[in-house]
Image 1 (cartoon, rainbow, N blue to C red):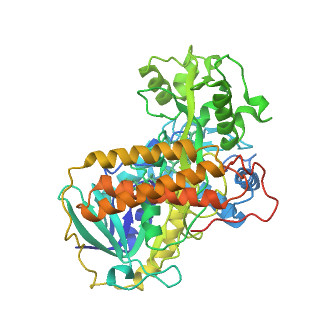
Image 2: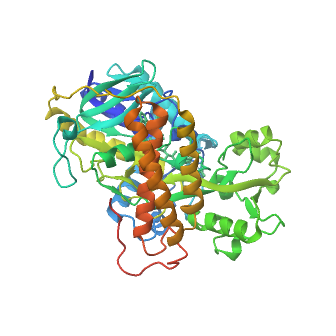
Image 3: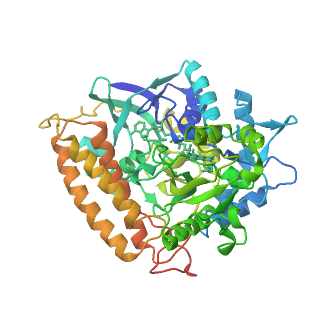
Length: 526
Ligand code: FAD
Ligand code: SIN
């Protein structure tokens, strides 16, 4: 058994910044399921949106966020996060983050849906720079312990004390059951305050820009613990991931379109003007649907991104990471058209929290991609997620110390019960079910949905759920089985929420209800 004043689940931007902020008031244990830097944060390319140019304004950033969010953002939350942005960026710079500068000033670029140049970046590897700085600070802090290869299996609540927990009764989080994947033992990690910072769930789909860690564990654990989860139908597909058998949906940043890239079909036609007057810089849902439409109508496997007019020197200087990745696959951005397809990228819904990251379970906070604060609404504006992760983590860290001081450790938490379970040799069942789930989600719950597709996805997923639950109960706890179980739970939440929405809005587009309802928008809460 381990005990910390604060347990942080996840070592991306949200988890690390919360840990650094609270470490002055108590001990912090950060658990992370792989190596410490492995996170969505580490792969973020384009940057962080924030108002740092005198000609820009908070109102414009708020307005752009609200427009992208298609009527479902919480205006107060948006305003608060936007206003907190500049101070958060300055804090990162003070910690040593080396953002790209031109003539000494922060270099601000533009992405889809933004009315002004306001994306702060570190070349095209912004996330790596943020992760580097935050990890370095966490490593040197005497109150912070980082436990790599520790996988959170379940949040501990009254349920584990034999008390029946429903969504209607008040619940508390006492820490988590955690699998140490090096010893293969499940430990109790007790905490006075727990932060879920487990990131997104892109792996639920066959093609995703997200790394393998993104299996939606946090949302699934919180849902099982009866926390409120909302807006799960809004899954963002990034319009431009590299189409290449060996590149596994590598992201071509939106900043490339912000820099003037043109989307062409395989006949060389620039098609975006047929879909939106903002062309390549329309919000992501519009661009992704336009590409999907081209692929379906033309029977093509990809469309093409054209940046040849920018010139080799400019491309190499501005997008060194993307340029060299394309070159690795024998594509020179300066002379070749780059084949791209949309890929699952970001989960706009998640564990419901207030602006301070407080969930509906006492002593359980959530921040970053796992959380649904009301910032993104039905569609996230580009580069608003790192901003949200950092700002909400900081805000949570302001209220969490009071909660921690008023809390005692629970000493009566039972050990993990694995009686009657066996080591499994049936790994093929797990890999097959995972593939099947990803295929179902890609084919039936992707960019364009319909009632029939959703019903079919629901019944397939239900069957997978039954099979995997039976398997989980019989086999010793392992990461692949837990992740699959979590992915199925997340898939269920996406499908259920999509079925409840009888309209098209933001990222949720269904051919049965192609229009946006003018009745007051509702949030799907599960
Ligand atoms: P993450 O950074 O994903 O961290 C999650 C952590 O939780 C990881 O350490 C993981 O190992 C750990 N974890 C998960 N489950 C468990 C478990 N069961 N037990 C223990 N540990 C667990 N956003 C922007 O704003 N700007 C961008 O330019 C941008 N570019 C992006 C490019 C790519 C390729 C991708 C994939 C995303 C991009 N995003 C961008 C989105 C953004 O990176 C993420 O939303 C953000 O980094 C999420 O941060 P986080 O701290 O919430 O989660
Ligand atoms: C990108 O660089 O295109 C990703 C930006 C984002 O997801 O916000």
